[in-house]
Amino acid sequence: MADQQTTKETTSNDEIDLGQLFRMIGNGFNRLFRWFLRIFLYFKKNFLVLLSLVIVGALIAFGLNQFVSEKLQTEVIVKPNFESKAYLYDAVDEIQANIKGKDTIFFSRIGISLPNLKGYEVAIDQTLKDIDSDNDNLEYLELLEKFQDGGLVTAVTRTEILNKSSLEHKITFTYKDAANGRKFSQKVMEYINSNSYFKELTQISQENALERIRQNEALLVQMDELISRYSDRMASTESQLNDQRIILDNEKQLDIAELFNLKNSLIRDIERKKMELLERKDAISIIYFGEPHIVQKSFFGEKIILIPLILLAIFFFIDILKYLNKKAAEVQN
Image (cartoon, rainbow, N blue to C red; front, side):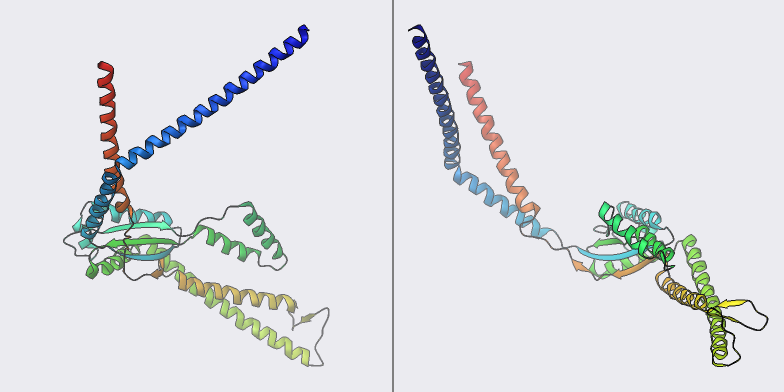
C-alpha cells in the first residue's frame, strides 16, 4: 500500500511540474506578444510623425544631391616595367599630396596651369589579383612538366614570372573641369614617365633588344646558308650521310635536327624582342587611356538613406529621454 501511495504522489508531482512548465511557457509567449503589441501601438501612434521625418529627410537629401556638382573621371590602365611598381605608387601619392597642398607651382613646372586645384584627385589601384590557390599552383606545375622535354620551360617560366610581377594597375583621375581634366591626366602621365633613371633603362633596353635582333638575324642568315649547303649535298651523289649527320669540307660534324631547333629558337627570340620593343617604350606602359565620363549619382544613394535615418534616430533618442524622465519622476514621487 505504501508503494502505491508513493507512486501516486510522484505522478502527481510530475503532473504539477509539467503544468507549471506549460504555464511558464504560456506566460512567456504572452509577455512576448504584449511586447510586440506595445511596439505596434507605439509605431501606430507615431506613424504620421515617422512618415513625415522620412519624407522630409529624403527631400533634404535629394536637394543636397542636386546642389553637388557633377564630377568627371578618366581611367588609365598601365603596366609598370623595369620593377617600377613602387616608383609608380610613390609618384601617384606625390601628385595627390601636391593636389591637397594646392601646390600650383609644381603643376606649372610640369606644364599644367591651373589656378584652382579644387575637385582634382588622383588614385591608383591594382586591377588584377595574385592567384595563390593550391589548385592553380598544381595546374601551373603540370603545365611546366609538359614542356620539360620541349626546351620551352625557360621561356614559359620567364613569361609566368613577368605576368606575376608586372600586374596591371588603374590610375583614376577625378576632376570637375571638363576642359582641362583630360589635359591634366595626360600631363601627369608624361611627368610619371619622365624619370631620368627609368628613361636611361628604357633606352638601354631598347638598344639591347635591337642589337639582339640584329645578331639573331645574322645567325639566321648563316644557318640558312648551312641548310642550303646541306640540301645541295643531299641532292648530290657525292654527299656522305651517316646517322643524319653530314661532314662539310674540313669541318666538324653537324646535327641538322639540332640546327633546325636552334633556328626555331632564334626566330622565337626575335619575336619576343620585337614584342619587348613595343611593350617597353616607357617605364610605365599605357595600355588604355579612357575618355572622360561622368561619375553617376544614384537617386537611392548614401545621402538619400543616411539623412532620414539620422532624423529617425534623433526622434527615437528624444522619445527615450522623455520616457526615462517620466519614469524618474515617478520614482521620486
